[in-house]
Image (cartoon, rainbow, N blue to C red; front, side, top):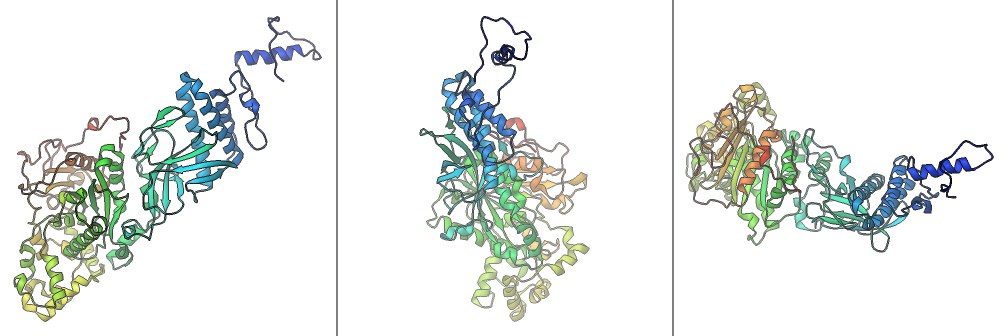
Length: 617
């Protein structure tokens, strides 16, 4: 029964209990003045009854807000979800007639949708696919668009809020909808499936519920990075975008960190995983950014850097991130040859016709040992490395055809096609004193020597000892070679290789650590990690883990922006275009080997576009 104020009675006075007028007057005053809100009536199933909108505006945003507030007081249950679905329906229906409340109404739709889906995806993470399903007893049309072409079967959906991100960073752009992660097992029906992580295929997405023209709820799941602003209840909104949770969720399930360490002492897990991995579908028009980890490490170290690239709209459109996994117990030149083979395999699968624009330019980023491997992917060795190991020219080395071919491929190297720019972090180009320290000597004994390529050297050294340099003969005969050995400052082949700079036309940048002004990052001396002729050099007060240093990441982002639209400068001299401080035109600051005013990236230079994400360390 609805109480109305008697217009003929100016006020309400205390009367005897038997007289109902005082109570009716009081109730009428409350309704008129809005001093309180009546509870929304909900049936046993949680469906909002007629009285939910039975005030002056039956389909009002206020009525939907009452449902949202009531739902927030209830424990997670299907009944609560039904209240939230009704909140969405009522708010959406009210919007066309409530122009002044449009922002409030859309926000309310998003709020109720987020809460409903957060509960539903936690309750039922698996088994989502296009078509009809039920949510809290209601039939819902599921529409999933913009997903990886390598997905197979139903999806697992995880709310991004349930994924732990690296502390101190922000890779999220607020917007409409609930950020989620989609996942399926790695496919097996396409040769390209091997280029995706064994943990599964993961992808960012944004989800929300709205009601269709037929009055039934629709669950939308879209790629927010590929989606134009979407229209919800007649209003244009930007989907919420989370750039990193999809990768972090996959990384949390990975055994790579443990396998990388065990791989140093001969563990085979990392070797079985060795190769090149796509984090998103291959795009023939985007420049590959190939990231190579260091000794005993794994590609998960690139989490913050990868997220910073994905979070930048312009970089996201220009580049595709590719991670390399390799077993780091092998000698340096063998690691370089293996990475070359992994890249060859990738291109064979992705671009068998060899005509994709992506193949014409790559940017290679390497940390520590991976930085040295990266440099060696860009050099023309001539016979420099060969002459440091052998006493005979390449065409006179005796041995089986297979052994000789393998040795020639290891010691006679050319720049990898398309490797146009390098970014080298804490790379021991002149070796590391750690390799000859007590711990280094112990490591040389522990680090595995199972590389089959070393056995070819052993067989040649045994059969034709006069062909091998005397100082290397014993180590070749006994196969006493591993990654630690080849990082020793006095190792002959390594010493010869340190003089090899990237070939003409290949731009290279160095980033080094000088921890507390000690002239080292704690592992690699500053002198060892710097290269002459670099297009830019940055020294930061940091330890060896530069891959997560905010200043180093800011510099890499700057370099990638500088590289956008640039072609490979074939035939240009290394270091061409440098100013007198060794910096190319446009390089922030005047970087040098050791400088008190180390260059920093100005945050004001970041894009101010609406869809940009400020990556905040």
